[in-house]
Image (cartoon, rainbow, N blue to C red):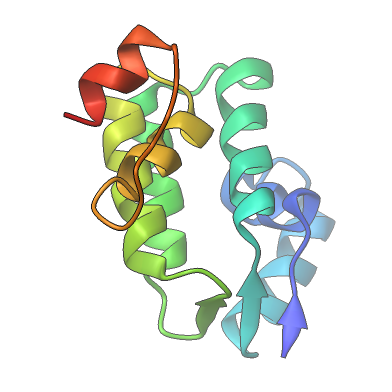
Length: 120
């Protein structure tokens, strides 16, 4: 199992460096890979803040990437995908979206009004 870094996933998604994209594509498409929640959060942050990718495009790309059958996560993939949905629909950051995705399993405590609304 290969553990992927945000930088590696970004090169794969953005295709902005042909050499790195080719290496990343070969690795990702031909191996069992693992992605940590924290890495997904970093990918979302970089795509949104640095590359100014729209939430809709970002959610589509990251969701498609995570839905590949050879991509595993320590966390339940369904919770991360739900977090991306909440992130897009509720105008909250990804980490808050993840907290909201866990609202049925845990009681979420926050003073953040947007997150409170999402958790209702």
